[in-house]
Amino acid sequence: MRYDRFLRRLVFACGVLITLSLLLGPGMAGAQAANKYETYRAAIKKDFGIDIKDYKDQLKGGKSDGKDITKYDLKQILMGIKIEQEHTSNKIIALEITMDHLEKFPDYYTRLQDMEEDAEDEMEDLKVKPKK
Image (cartoon, rainbow, N blue to C red):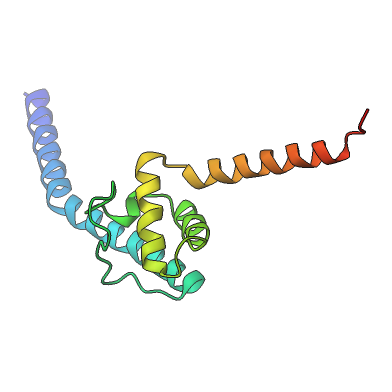
């Protein structure tokens, strides 16, 4: 008899916990997503002076169209905006190009940086080698 009462209480407690997690879970996830977005927004504003609050795709047909900016690593976003400004003076366009690249390769800008450093090292090696 005591075992039956224990099981009923356990099932009831599990039901309460499941119900609470279903009710509170989405709200908590939404708050976390909002905090992450605000972190991205503040970092981009600090580094590049642009506010992404009302960001909308300007280049139609990109791989990141309609995607949430927080899907991508913030460090990669910041690296990308800086690098893409070599091709455009519009920082929002640079952001969009960055997101398109990151959609394809999540570490695109780290790879690009590594490739450029390797190429620079190779060029240095060619300059230093004595000629025969």
